[in-house]
Length: 369
Image (tube, rainbow, N blue to C red):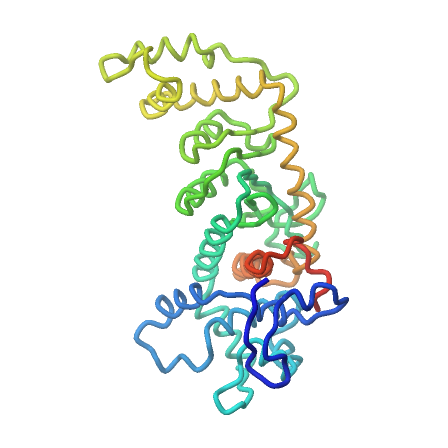
């Protein structure tokens, strides 16, 4: 466990998160006290406060942690500030050099969320946290799945989804193991498969190092199989229907045929197996590569065991919804995406705090209030 020196006589002079793991009820600010986001705060200062030193009245890391408190406790901006105790304010570093508590007003916090950061800022913070998580963990299995963000039945902007039988938007969430690293927001009736390209492109930028990428049948396409293999260098573990058949064009005989047919541009049947697939992908035969990878899954006796890892999605989605109010009820249409991402970032930061302090139950926040 990491040890920290505290800022006030009201708190022990030396403390660690281990001191609170066996308690029944702990302030969420205590967990945030052990969260190190100085790198993210520095990025926000450089990108959103350029050449405006007079804006630095409050520490950026403290403001970000205050957003976490708001989302976790599901309070308005005004109540987030008014219900914060002096000790919690000290844990979030809102104490100045003279020992005076200096909290921002609720309007200042609202301005920081909606106008200083906005959707762009939260997207960038989400990316940086996801990159941090993917580098901290040693887990090597990835999965993406969507979950409903329920809306009021009177919301005229939300789509009705016949599968979930409610009005909703969708959150498409990518996790490494059980750790959330990226999310996109769409309308409630949007298809899942088109979102995968965005996630793959972001994962490439993050530099994730994985072995498998598990996806349900909604992502079953030859192009998705090929993109996962080529761009992420991972095995695509994508569910297929029970009546799926092996495609002849995806057999090794046909792979060799097309590699040999393009000998004028460098193709050769004497290439190594992976080089053949890469060559075809890069020369207009991506769909054939996807057919081949899907054929391998159909013939693989261990496929079901690898695909079973995707079952964690449902459990973690429920945990996110329990931890933060992960829906769009009562939100203005123009703000739905930003606030959904903000709440996802909140969950990411809580997970990161547990990871940094080597807490085994990474996704457990039941003790915090």
